[in-house]
Image 1 (spheres, rainbow, N blue to C red):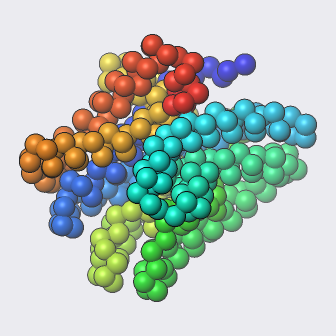
Image 2: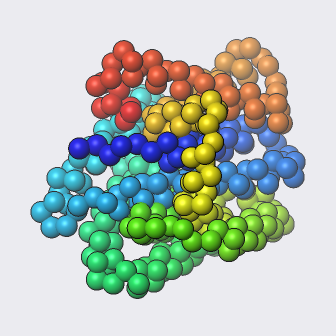
Length: 345
């Protein structure tokens, strides 16, 4: 039986997928590495996108019965629900690799293990599903000790991104996205934190400490971006240790009863629309990079239009989002079952 969808969490997913598009259109929009201060601030904030998705996933997985014999049927269903769409969307890139003479074994590896485009996220989600029996066991054994698991996973994430942000650049090493970002230890803290919040009967804690901590962590994000730039590692607007801390502090703010209740009192068309975007968020995630690629070819090579800066960022994000959303909406209306299997919505 499917869970009833909650508008607030679809709204969070809707915002998060727009943040994802903003992230992936950032480098194209500010060509040459000339990033205005405001753009660096915004780009750092958008790093919360993947953590929000994982926290939402963990939050709703908390009520699933996955002990013992119930785990395999659950995992099988969830696995194919996310894996078949990413396999389908990766296949054109796999064909291009083979047609252009790329290493066959490497291409097969990328296809099977979500190594194409930005599909590492699906590999992370599948690994997080495998953690559920362990999380259930630990929580049922002693929910008061569960924060230790959260803290340990936070340390893993911070250390992992410290290696990625400082150690690898110092060695001059550049790893594929699936290698450095596809391990559960880099992200699982948000899934685990979401799971913990989902198991709690009430979340009526004060948001004041989390507001303060997330604000301080965000300032640290901006400072670390400048520090990485000073070291010669680039402006450092992507994920990094301080970004992990910011997202970690921001998640309980978003998932608090106080914020959710305030949201539930709002009623406007924009919120309703963003909630509908949340429903299509997985499909948008899968296809938006294709739309982004088509836009870049059409605008820069065929139409010979040269935009840069905030205007390019706004136009690029809006066009990619609208085309992706409209395509999925139409496919869902015309071919609901096929869209469910191939595009995950």
